[in-house]
Image (cartoon, rainbow, N blue to C red):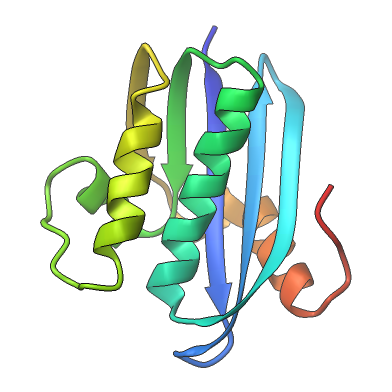
Length: 135
């Protein structure tokens, strides 16, 4: 069975303080979780950064087949090739994410509703509130 990666980025203000939340699952068990504050930037940078960190943790856990789930329609459509990345500050993040995608035999991207992504939303907001550090 493949791994499932949930990711979310959050920003207070746009630009403002950013944070990410990532959860990696396999066979119903949590393999890893990240809640990390990033500094200052935009919500789109936070979303892309969350995806990148998620792809890194999935690689580190040896996932070969990965389903990526996120509530950022923009990031999901850009990484899957439905939308072009036009913003100069997002192109390097897109390129890094695409390179990391090469670590997987199979990778699929799925947009999910915000309520289906509640855990990563909580992790990113907790990091903004400085309640949780990276695990």
